[in-house]
Length: 127
Image (cartoon, rainbow, N blue to C red; front, side):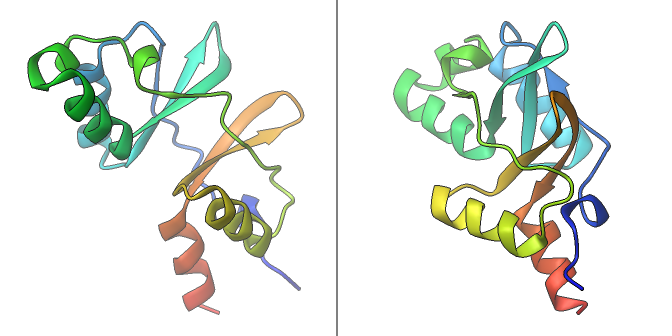
């Protein structure tokens, strides 16, 4: 039987608000040793901010303005999501097709986790 996303996802969510400064989001990622933060507005998922977004912001805004810019200026709005009962293969396909490495997990309208490309690869390698 195929492994479900719920079996490999992280439920330890690192979140920020759209108004949070990019430097604070980067610090939260570094502290939690993760490559993305989920952006919530009044408890609702509105975006995702990743390591790649930080690099893009530094390129676009230059270093000092990027540090004090809100996450909302560099995040991906309304990210693709997947349900917890989806298979690891389905999650991998969605990430490869979209060319991203972090996928929020939604159960109905509720954010329940996140899965990374590393999580998926680890689950596949362990058979």
